[in-house]
Length: 402
Image 1: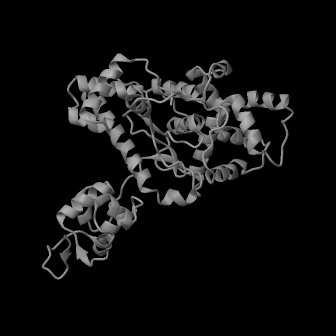
Image 2: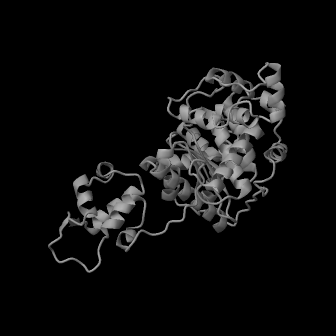
């Protein structure tokens, strides 16, 4: 119950400015807080405008929704929070004020990777990371060529894939073998497609959107884009539309790398010449882009970026195409593929990946994770979580393609 402001109050109580900051930093409106915390929007606004004072129980309630410590509310000014995510957004408007759902899933990614790192450290488990350091000024063709060789990817590899899911699964496993965790969570595709995190010496982690608008082909592009961030060891928040020259260069390098590793320019050039398409065109329609991308089993992003880099499309072609695609409904035409209905255990394995599932299983066997913690980590009931761990141990080669 709200406390009347005329009543004698403690010398220092919740700071209205911090209450407002904590809410808006999560992209929440008062009406949304009402739905999530069962506290009337009017009360939220009264607290933020110093017309009333929340009880401690109220602060504990909204702290869970705002994903912050209760102690924040008693500070004199907003704390400086280090941005450790390196994520790629799709719209200029949303990058500044991400939705609550996006904040929640990014926080889930951070908490999960923190927990995984602590398990590796506490159990003293070996975890080798094999990621070279790349200079952003090095020709992207050289970098992509080395990485293709290290991943064991050839045009013949591509020919063996029957679906885009198999393609994504190949790249995911290749990256996981290099020591990075790959997490696939449901994100709002018009806000964030991927993220990367590497707090050395801890294991690096990549986040991809399992609801990407181009399904597995889009996730593959995002995965390799974020891998490029690990290669160049670029810290902090990077967005190609923020107007920062350094950040823009990093994003361009990551885009070029992802496109080049999937579709080498020399191979792409030969294909275009065989189709009499090797010329600068005033317009490359989506239908033609789809026809080309199906040959290489990649997303539209890859083809658009490659055409612009080869100067077969005008400058800014990919940027404008990407903006146009973001305004449309998701499409899943052509090379998509997939498997039938999956069990909850299979879906969770797709989200966290085999290395994470194995790590959690080992930690549980060693008593490093309680039943309740296991259930919370996996987002399952205790009985389901225990069955999941048993299933992971008994099915080392269960289907994992997203």
